[in-house]
Amino acid sequence: MDFGLSAEQQQIRDMVSEFVDEEVVPVAEEIDHEDEFPADLVSEMADLGLMGMPFPEEYGGAGLDYHSYAIGLEEIARGSGGLGTIVAAHTSLAGNMLYEFGDESQKEEYLTPVAAGEDIGAFALSEAGAGSDVPAMETVAERDGDEYVINGGKLWISNGSVADTVTLFAKTDPDAGNKGISSFIVRPEEDDGFIVEGTEDKLGDKGCPTAELRFDDLRVPDSRLLGEEGDGFVHALKTLNGGRITIAARGVGIARAAFEEARDYAGEREQFGQPIGEFQSIKHKLADMDTKIQAAKMLMHKAADKKIRGENYIKDAAQAKLYASEVSREVANEGIQIHGGYGYTKDFAAQRFYRDAKLNEIYEGTSEVLRNTIGDQLLEE
Image (tube, rainbow, N blue to C red):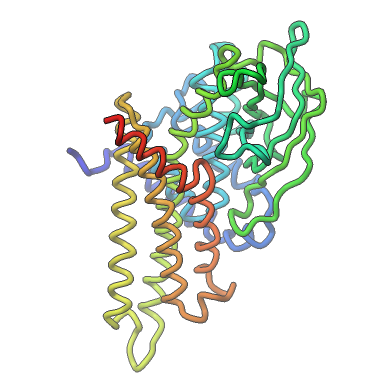
């Protein structure tokens, strides 16, 4: 078992880390305060090949393995949790739907600009009454000649208000349960009936717009059906499974940022005539924080390794996402504690890391749902 990075992986880490330190960290507080989509940064990331890291070069991607992708996303999230979500939703969800389930013409027309970062992608699955319970969705798509007419709405859609390409789930057979769900490619600027109702004012994850969408007789040509009718539920599960690796990466990145901020503060802040980092209680906090981060990182790479090898990684991805999510919140919480009263003010970034970390335990599979997934997999072994 090799725990070292390859030369290419080290190069990716160093390149993204330098970009984050120079371009993202200096504006992270502004992104958090303004809560506007950072189009300029996203454009710069596209130029660096960071908006399509795991996709083949023939489709506009960077052709990187999933370890490198996770490493890159970890660094991006270290600079800004919202930017990490933008990339993860764009790549792991929307982009991966196109790559895994699109036919060749769909890949050439829709995946290529997404992988190149020329178009922004979104993944429209959740609804007000259908979050973890996907088959409860009420959005429907009725066939009308060589088109589908879609009516309904979606909620909690990352990138939803800025997306050029949306992978959308709807019921083509409302009486067939999860076997009646299909997936489509939607182009908001081209397709009449695609309506952005608004965006959420969230606790954290600023800069990534989380949209409420509505579809009023939205017409989509049948050439934009992904796979066959009824394949959508399987598409969603497989896509979310891969996406959990990158949410683990987001969790690791935020945890690292919180740890590094707390470590530096502990070395500078003096009480009782010495830096607070010299007190055993603070040393123990830092030790536990870093240990948890390293364990989360190992789970992330274990899941990525199984994905690369083509092995079943459902349990591994769920464990990586579950643990990294909870670690990111725990480490961020300890970061605030180390900062004391200052950690509870917006003068320090400690509180931002906590707000960004909490989302990891909710989206792309809540911690409660992931424990069920892990338990199911264990009973099947």
